[in-house]
Image (cartoon, rainbow, N blue to C red; front, side, top):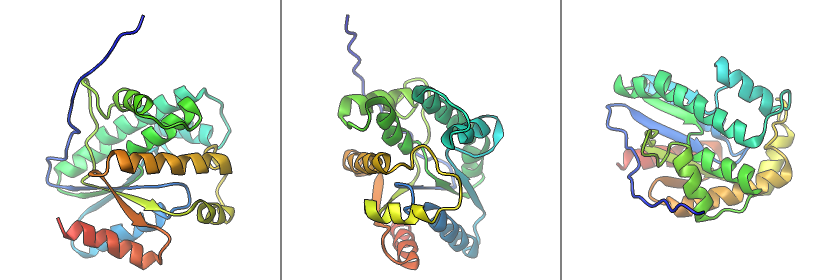
Length: 226
């Protein structure tokens, strides 16, 4: 028997004094580099900056997540997605929200938007449609009646071509993660394209295939305009 679910709920906005910025995109798009550049910029402007990432690589949950991502531990994909959410909830409680309340600039390498892209990849193998996305939006506490994550003030999707991602990842020195296989990256790219079309008012596309300084400049200019 089918049980229809139908309700409307707004995304939870940041109502605190701090600034919340998220960087999203496929592996190799330059998130880590741009996180450092933005952090440097805001510190020079006299702001206190807090840098974070989701999922984290340390802590009770983060340690396990990292072991699964590099293949040292095995878990069903749905279990991994719940671990992502658990780590995200802890990160928001311990780091993000207290920092925003204190008026700091929070810059994160990925946020809950990744749960949609990678969650659908795990659930369907990469077939992105509204019904699966809505299910994940609810279960991952993005559009939840029980608990919601705060939406970043700015989410920048650093867009690069697939071949550029693969080229950059060839030079990666860290252990290869389970999502860094060529076919999965291609499907993740499709997922981000779906995401930015569905949430065009929340996600700003930046050409990540430009010189590093130009990418940073475009993001800073977007922030200054608001």
